[in-house]
Image (cartoon, rainbow, N blue to C red):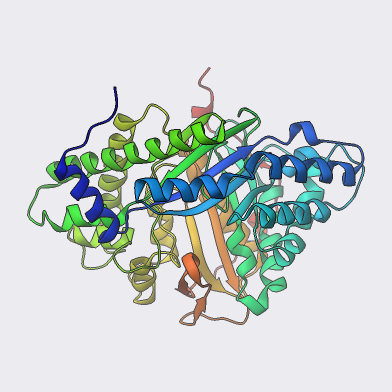
Length: 455
């Protein structure tokens, strides 16, 4: 039986799109490259390029057709591939930058915004291929425009690989230095995860997990502006009732996302995967998660009560989404990226929001410390310790956490860094000056917590 819509529903959708910044943030095609492994790295590269172009060649055209048909913008069309460390390891080479260039050429050929999967999963230890890939990340991110990288350093089941954490502190420092002419922009394309999901459509952390099918379409919806409208229209509503109203709105947004995903799946001839119902903000005024929290009654995001307000928001969004689709996945929550959220950036500049408060908020939200600029002279050990703190939150709470942090070369607290586009601008935030060096350099593996023993 075909869908039918009332006039009020049509007008509501038009208002959401034209006034409240409603959009499909991304349609992301996941592509398995497991059949592209080859002892000859150049042969593997040829297979990888041909498979991506063959499989995702129509992705942008289909996305644009859906935009026209439904009248709702799709901001990004993206591809995520099998972690390259798993594929490249079949070859005996000592440098995988060639494959990063292959991914870049494929992304340019099919016209997508980003390609994710220059990734390694090292939560319990390194293989030779993992180490080679991680060592190549600074070069890759400085020499490509579309390639995104991710490294998973911990899980609830395995604990936290502190050798990998320290390594990533040094990788982030080097990546920032190699892109110093762009305020350390390379770091904006790198996420360090704990409990990384296999079906995440959002960059920079997307990769196509080994448990996924050969090809799949995942959709990431957004809608902070729509939720903000609901909260502002109910200034005197108690929090329980407000949560219900947010939940109803999230239901509508998620249904729209699944509609797009299934339409894309049908047109492209690949399976539909998941809807990621994360509230993903942009630098545009009125498209901010921080503004939602302030509309709940906080003078500024970061004030006492911020974590509780975020809990109300995140839980309501998840409940509404879960009612709308049986295939909710990815990250699914509220993002709090400082540079990409005009309200977060303002709160950080005014001193209402600190890195410590953001860390507390990550106990609630997706994903973690995101798009935060810190002084360029911050040590690799301090960056690694920040990663370890965030990974510990994820490990203990059985949730995905991540760190996308930018030590902006030459910048100090109070300076601003400009990234442009959806990446926005951010104030450089102060970092605790007490040293974690001895702790980080202990290495080893932080054991999995007791809650990992769930079998």
